[in-house]
Image 1 (cartoon, rainbow, N blue to C red):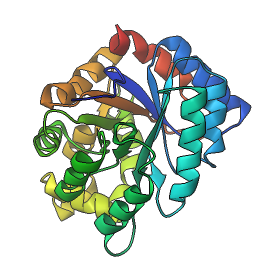
Image 2: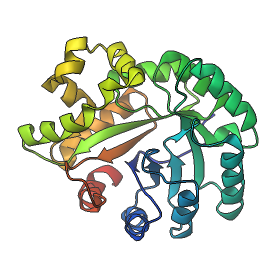
Image 3: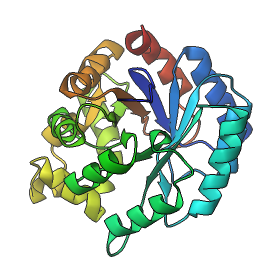
Image 4: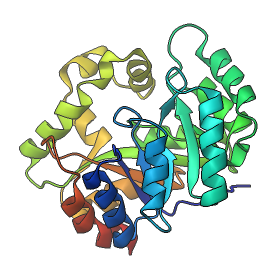
Length: 272
């Protein structure tokens, strides 16, 4: 039985404790988005989660992801315990980033140390079948990124019907095909260099040449672009394939402010 509910759509983004990030979290809540998935790289520390919860009222936050190489189980347990007491149900621990040998064994050991955090408030950034199986066995579900709707259907089969499946998907609010694909391609180009993502993309049927050249069919499979309605139609393919929730990772090709204008433009198509 699924215990978490984040609605059909949320936001993936990197937030800190800066004034701009706190304002962005409030803006997402005001727009009606039910959840923000906090990218692990930009996250400066667990205090940021507390800061974001403090300045908002209802929106939920998920660490997507906390690397077990960077955050100790003791620190995560303490943060969860404090936040659950202060704001029940608004923080879910998303884990991953087990690099090096024996990642499954290391994640299992970590989860053993995290048992005070109930399974229904833990998720894994699972890509492959073994990680998805671990997510099904020991957490509330999985949070894969950079997958096609066809692979979403496979992930649902592996997880079973009672586990949460949240998919993070790149979004470019741009109708010009060349500009949209260029923005998406620039972001996607980083991931084939990471062994876990390269293996995931190959499992989805992409070839070594695809991973090197990033052709249009790969970009179009991994990034939704166009008008808000076209983007919503593309993202709903994940729901049809078995996803419970799709988290939009809006990319603009510009480093800087949070894409609040894009969240606002997309909200009517995604949240009504």
